Image 1 (cartoon, rainbow, N blue to C red):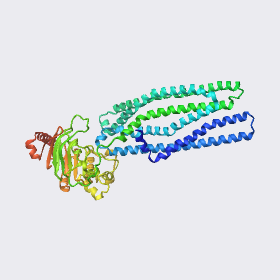
Image 2: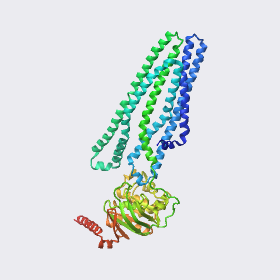
Image 3: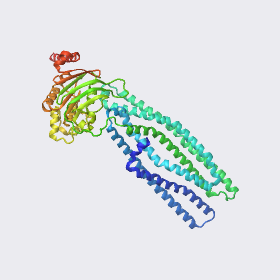
Length: 585
């Protein structure tokens, strides 16, 4: 888990390694300053000349300056290393997510991925800077201070045998009590981000149903749970300060009491004023280093959960990958399903598709009809390998789709999914997603075929009109036509429309289908629709129910023998006639 994260250090490895080296030098100097100060006190006590005081003063000044410089350098290098590490970590996570197949993405909610790339990375960054600074500094300061205390204080240094275990035990109990609260926070972050994401995306529905107060309460509850956990943990961690002060004052009391007694009884031979002063300083250094170690423990323990969650993203292996000796050319737009069964997960109880045998010739127009959950979308998602068939074979151009280079396959199979997505930017920038090298003439032609040119030309800025995030400033029908035009710019051999004209009127729907027949006759067109009118003139219509193909045929053939199709047609025709009648009235 830690090895996975450390790969993201990258080019910041040198600064990460330099930090503890610089800190080691700083720690040595800090340990020598009390020793030098004690020597100065002894010299003054012995009645030294002014020049000796100046000499020791200069040495202490230089040591303090050097310690300051090294401390600043350590802060600089650690900041560069930690911020660079966090940047690389977010980049690596984002790049990894881009390699995921739909099956991989299904394992993580979008809100969880956002939390992992933001909050969790921040905790991991804090842990990293803690390791290269405090985790190195604290043990070194502790070690040097113990050694110097023994050198300076002799038998008096035995007091640390009492104080150190007392502090260590107290800090351990504090960390042990605080950790469960910190652990529970991260899943609650996911729920809070999920609440925010749902509310922002579905803001129109929230306002349409006047559910603002409900959404506020839901968010407040999620935020309150996080606040409670953090408050509980912080209250416990706050006990560190009084515990630390108690140990510091206890150290001072013991040093002054026993030190003074030894100094007086030995007439300064076993212990003098300078040594007592040094012992006080070393005692504080020892206790502070232990306190820092406790904070290191707390931070690292908090971060373990974040590190685990980040590692899950980085270690997740894409289910769908490029094969060896991949094929980089798609011969034509023919599609064959041979004995295909499919389920979304190996652990799923039921198959989404069963016993699928379907053969589509290149250039054919195929309609797919079926009720909700009949497997229509699942079927077409196997063609560009958004998912892989669990059993059986899916072929495009006579070749198993698993043998193609993924980019080659998906550039030749354009899919307009049910959930149409537009990105912030201009209309032209959105269309160029289909083909970044498309000319203005090709863009206009694709929009004409998708019947999008009609409304684009009505905008004052035309193709330079700004689209807000997710296309919230255009209608559902306009969004669908733009996504169809974007798909057409790929000049695909197979075009899949997954209920992608549901928001356009029947007249526009008919014009789009007519454009397809006349201008892209060699492209295989697979149209999933709810309206029979959208597929009535298809070369063949596939009827699906319960994940299986019930029947295949033309409109006339299905009207004769397929009850599901006939009932659907009759119901829609009656509604259409009723609508016309009502208009007439």
